[in-house]
Length: 35
Image (cartoon, rainbow, N blue to C red):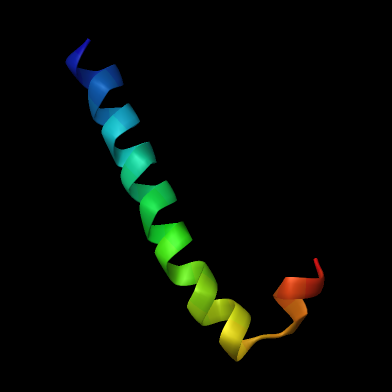
């Protein structure tokens, strides 16, 4: 139970980090906006 919960927390954290990093990537690399 604790292991699965740890995986869920790390997964949510990864999603938040990706969402925070996407605007910077789209500004630096206009290619990602077309995909």
